[in-house]
Amino acid sequence: MLEIALVIALGVAAGAVAGLFGVGGGIIFVPTLTLVIGLDQLGAEATSLLAIIPVAILGSWRQTKAGTVRWRDALIIGAASVGAAVAGALIADAAPERALRIGFALLLIATAAQLAHATYRAGKATG
Image (tube, rainbow, N blue to C red; front, side):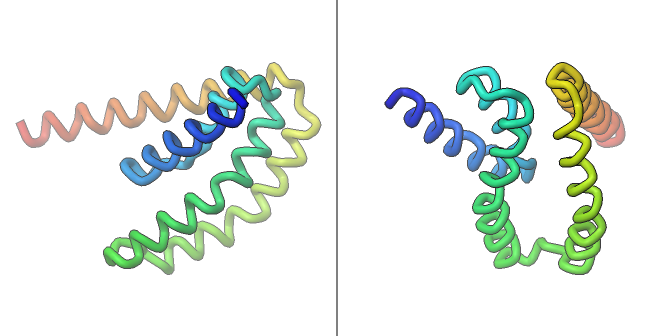
């Protein structure tokens, strides 16, 4: 019962973050599924990929209504990423758990650094 409550809370938090910031729920799903729910890295990644589908559909629908979706770019990115996602899943299946965790942590650190740098530069440009 506690695990179900935690999974529901995770869904609410990921949905809110995705809606507010437009980031993939994987940024919230994967760490929480591994650290709180106890899934291994590969299981968390696989679960996250499936769980993000309704979030992505609803978020895209809302943003389309607001007129902010660039459909051509979205379709090109989506089409280009299909093969890479399959390749990534095959690599993840073969990779050691530790390598997946380190890779995911490095991705989060790089994303945070990029966002911090862009925010700093934007602040300097306006201030």
